Image 1 (cartoon, rainbow, N blue to C red):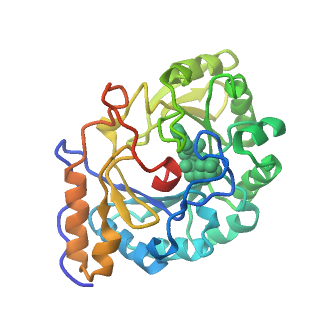
Image 2: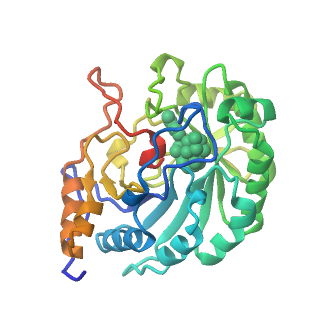
Image 3: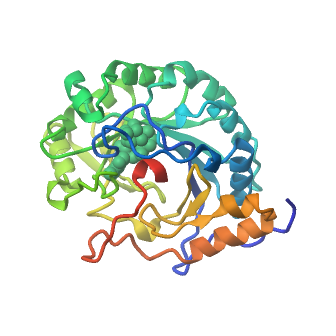
Length: 336
Ligand code: SAM
Ligand code: SF4
């Protein structure tokens, strides 16, 4: 496994990559309409899934190349049976400067039993997806009757001391765009951070239409109807544009991935559950680290492959380009 690892993950445009998103599984306990078809998608073959040792090894190589934050995602990351062990192993990775920051994006269904063990294993914070506060709408949106479990998961995350707890809502026209201000109020009342996301063309069913997307500007308009907002700008390389809700300590953020692309600030790379390294959500090429690793590559060779993948990153995702083609993998298999 030896071999010297030198140099960082820098692309042609000088962007330095410090944030790694690892998908722990492509499977999910919900079937959000904007993400998965009702019957799910053909799951990755189990022989192709990275073992925990393999996944942690690749994360360690990436940390050696300058990665300083790791976000676990999926699919639903809490469906991975050994997720607490994965977190503990990643939390044990050492960087030369700051500690590795570990976070997770989840639908929260398993947080009631897992929030405390995850916190104890070294998880710092969570982003929880919550698109609606109405039980009937939750069923329509996710095809599962689990709103109460999601809400219990949110409380469990708070109780376990995972902080901050951020809530992510994907806003869709005619579906949940009338709940924007209610979601903000829900978050303020509970000391949570609300983030709204523009719908991106990443659904397995290829149903995305630009016209039906609710823009960041429209989302802010809806928030402003109930709350006074003070602009705070960007939070470092994080994708959200932030606002303080005047008179409170709460912030609200808008992730305008389509209309306000933040590609020039992007510092993210991704590892899929089957060991493919990606330089962008929208990339068409992947670097097959699983095969390299299973063929006996040492760490230096894996690092070279990661660097080469980053070097070929495009300037932007090009959603607005007429030649844009959605990637073959859906969001659930890339890792959102
Ligand atoms: N299952 C977990 C969850 O839902 O939080 C983690 C994976 S999910 C793919 C991560 C995030 O991606 C969620 O907040 C979800 O709303 C978002 N997402 C899924 N499909 C999307 C799309 N087409 N455009 C924008 N965001 C999307
Ligand atoms: Fe599952 Fe998350 Fe996709 Fe919903 S958005 S289907 S919870 S992976």
